[in-house]
Every structure is written in C-alpha cells, then in structure tokens.
Image (tube, rainbow, N blue to C red):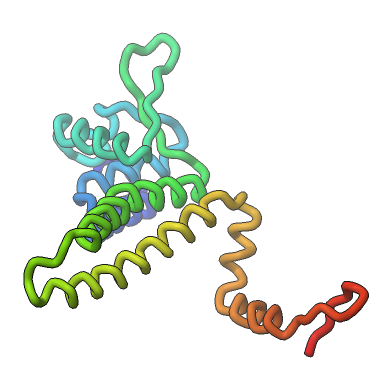
Length: 189
C-alpha cells in the first residue's frame, strides 16, 4: 500500500479482512475503507495506486460499492475522470447497509417462506416443515416490520433508543404498571 500512513493502512487492511465476514470480498472492503477515510474524492487510478490493485479489480469493486449505494460517483470541474467518495455520515452508512442487507437477504427469504407456507403439503412430513417455516416467517416478518419502523426514526431518536439498550425493558415494565384513574390521571399500581 503506497503512501498510506500506518494508521490508515491498518484500518484499510482490517476492513478488507472484515469484508469477507460481511459478505463482500477483501478488495471491496479495502476500497471502501480508503474512500471513507479520504478527505477528497478519488478516481479509480488513485485507488489502484494507493492499494496496489489492478485497475480492473478497482473498477469491479467500485461497481459493487455502487450497487450497495455506498459510494457516490461525481465529476470534478475540468476533469473528465470519474471520482468516488463515501458518505461522511456514519448513520447514513449504517441505514444504507441495513436497507441493502434487508433487500438482499431478508426480503427474498420472506418471499420464499410465504410461498412455502401457502403451498399444499404433499408429503407426510411437510405439515411439520410448514409449521417450522411459518414460525421462521413470522419472526422474519416481525424483524422486517421493526426495521421499517426504526428506519423511519430521525437520527436523534434512534441514538436515544440505542442508548436505552436493555433499560427499554424497565420502561415497558413501568408502562404495564400504569393505570388510568378516574379523571384521566395516570397512576402507578
């Protein structure tokens, strides 16, 4: 890796290794990490040189990142090349990744499970299998619905919700203890 500080190089290498665990290849992870840390848009030649990748690997990696909506393509005045940058807002990145994972993983699984559950059972064990698939369908549908609701929250509310963590359980317990008394006042039991 050429001209990258040890700090940047470490981050880029780590993202490459983590990429394979997240369902993208090492090259794509490293390209994204470099773009995320860059203080300016980079063109494909600059990326290839910095990471010591072939130009074709960089082009394929950028296409993949574009399909995930994780990079922006832009043109700079007076330059015919295409430049790429990553969104700066980590919450936008998180939401985009969550949307894409839902679209690519949950939605097709939910669709398959819907079809499987409504298909008429033809084998003796199919009824049991359908019951299990229905349970999985219901869970994934609940997660999908929750995701849609959470996705609509503004960033400040989302941060507050995440900071609540397990304390949300206590809030729900307290809500269960509230009761309306005559006159419309709320009281705890």
